[in-house]
Image (cartoon, rainbow, N blue to C red; front, side, top):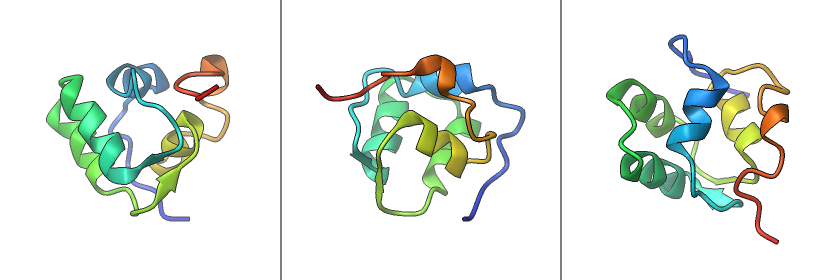
Length: 82
């Protein structure tokens, strides 16, 4: 699994810029939501380097950008569709 550097970003920072995103979400939807939430250039760059495809959860996005697995445990239910 390819990971990118998080540039010292916390799970909370990533969660904030993806607030309002419903999962599953395609990479372009992830990037668009971060842009809409006015993410800074560093976070946008990380998200733009995600591999294409569907992401099923915030935890999956976080793992793919290099945050430790389980980093999103405190954010259970974030963006889930019911």
